[in-house]
Amino acid sequence: MTQPCTCPHSASPQLHCPWVDAPPLPRTLPPDAPHLLPAHLWTSLAPCLRTHVRHTLCRILEEVLNDRPRP
Image (cartoon, rainbow, N blue to C red; front, side):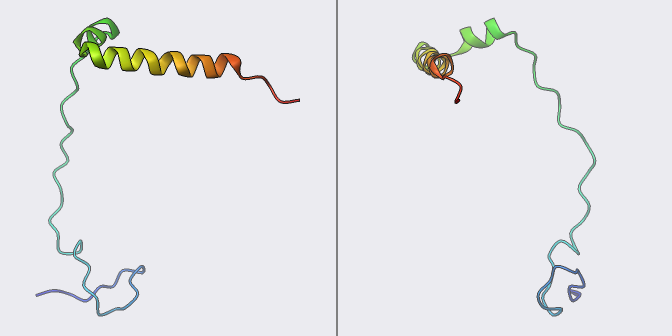
């Protein structure tokens, strides 16, 4: 049997809040991600993706280096 929603955020007290009857989630942490050194990560990328990343980084550096402070 569902209970009427008594939460303060409800627009109508007759609406049902689905999270009221939901069972609690387990308190387990996800496993740690594997540690990769930057060089290993870079060599694991496809050559096309490396070219795209390199181009994007160069464009960002150009924008940063050519940016002049405003008076």
